[in-house]
Length: 582
Ligand SMILES: Nc1ncnc2c1ncn2[C@@H]1O[C@H](COP(=O)(O)OP(=O)(O)OP(=O)(O)O)[C@@H](O)[C@H]1O
Ligand SMILES: [Mg+2]
Image (cartoon, rainbow, N blue to C red):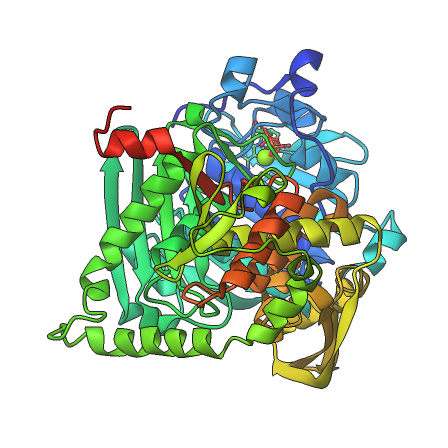
């Protein structure tokens, strides 16, 4: 095995380029950083031993390249890394780590010691972070990092930790998440000596299917698409295997688990015709892309990325998943659909039924102020007087249950009503939140629903954040949550689905600063649940109300996922379509 690369302190100019911030929030964040280090070191076997849910002790042992004796103090120093050396490296990171910060951050909030040995060394060396002392030690080639008494120096932060069981659950999830993208590596996990996970090296297929819920095995399709320097492989669940929760959705970019709106939206969009809106598809997807085309230096925990060309990636993922689902999707609505089409038809049917039941009233109520100021819409689409005041024009008709057609001074306006509505609600919520005043709608009958330990802990931990965004959501029993109020703007939404989606965001983003650092994502999640369903028939009045709302809304030409909400076809555009010279 090649020896380790030397660890160097990064130059100040580069340090200032790196997304900095809190990286250690709970035991699971320590587990994540240590596993990533072990993987970057080329380990083929990684053992994780936890005590007290990881709060008392976390020990991660790997058989990777080890750390040279003289580099041990540097491993614990801030901004010291062997993984990048220049801005150019930073722009095309191929390793999981690159900031040279994780071990220093952990050592500042816990007692840390490292035992490491390279292949060249005659024996291992041990360093203790607090004293900095290095001494000979026993140990095989590889590295063993021990982290004890998390937050012992900061009792205030320690108080924010949940019950050991909850922290343990987060740790297990973290190991699973990372293991699902590194099947060639063996992972073992023990808690207080009890084996919780044993994952021998396997193929990607075997590893991914083992970690997915049982129902996935019998109801999935493979994805395998390539286009130039970008590839997507993995598995997507058939609509029949969907669930209410989003816990079985894994997306990786170059081996790194990410939570990214562009990607999750693309997958979601591929299911749009075959899956009830509130049902969550199951998937494990792996995107490979030239590291220079994706920025991983966006957020301190690196769970967010930014694509240089988000549109192209969105299209690529959407088509790849659509293609994988296509044989099943063709069953929908076709008279002699394949046998597997049966259950899918049922799901699609349920979706249609639900759309019809959507209370028209709630939508009208929401738009009420604007409805009052409607311009008169005449059959010829005239209303010339109103056109100056109404850049988006006057509604003519609804097309395919999805688009609103309108006429303005330039020609034809086509509005994606779903996207437009989402944007309107998003901006309204944003203003309310900025004013620290999100009006609530108390539910006549509080909704009690089953939830797992993680969700319950999240609701407990974030009660204040939830209240700030208008949700009154609290534990009702050790296995149930109760929802008593929702934001008034979302009064018509499925409250339970909404609550689950928000809990998921809180769980993934975490932290006390979620409302400042992730407010846009949270708002997008909320708005998405208020959106008017596709295929709802709108009256001309409602259509005009929507146009007026759009005009009054900032950035109404972009929905929360970056899709346009409307397009203009000028008369000249139409003339060109018909090759009509004027
Ligand atoms: N398990 C390990 N095996 C070998 N070397 C390691 C291991 N863990 C850490 N190192 C060395 O210590 C250095 C510092 O690790 P640390 O996790 O603090 O930073 P990083 O991985 O470089 O970047 P990041 O802060 O993004 O994780 C690494 O660059 C690597 O050289
Ligand atoms: Mg690291």
